Length: 251
Ligand code: MN
Picture 1: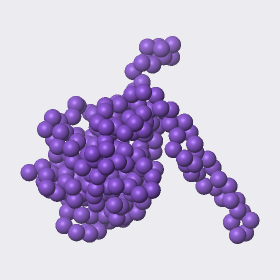
Picture 2: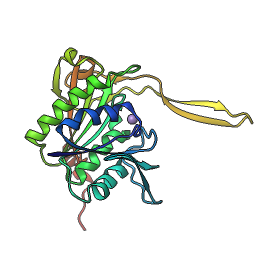
Picture 3: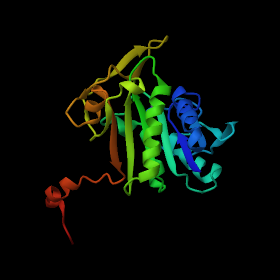
């Protein structure tokens, strides 16, 4: 029987993680360990400076108080699964897309990255869409992908960033291997005044915006395809290594 460890960055109460949990139950044991609140944008942060506590919600369903997605992977793997590797670490389903450079801020993608660092094949799931999200439809796509990854495995050090359009399962045009796109930034710092006249600031995305080059994650979801971007733990810019030879010096 397959064992899945599910985390997210939207919190244990989010409809996305619960849809994924329910959809995977027929496939095996589903262990959920998720933050107690929405931590979208927390990135790959791991908590070293304070103790963490876990609360049991239900059978194989836990929340980490004030814990990040990476913390949840650690506690799920080391504590709940007692150091026994699950077949897959799955992160999401995130409410909103994780495309282009978003993945560096994304707690969802970081959950999968953390799983991969621990040597476990991992997949991050996000939905591209706003407003009313059809999580049960999106979860069907997740199950498809989970089955195929269980069957075929993933290349070494590879984890997947999957973005799924908010469409009915029958309306999806296909599944496409894509590359990470580039974001056309639409983020702003908003300035307000508090009741005492002191300024405070709020960083917020104004709207989705990416360069829609063909073959990218953004292009795929814009055109009704599921985008599957393979990510590598190696962040080295291999192309630049030769170009930067001028910096090299041996004493
Ligand atoms: Mn999120």
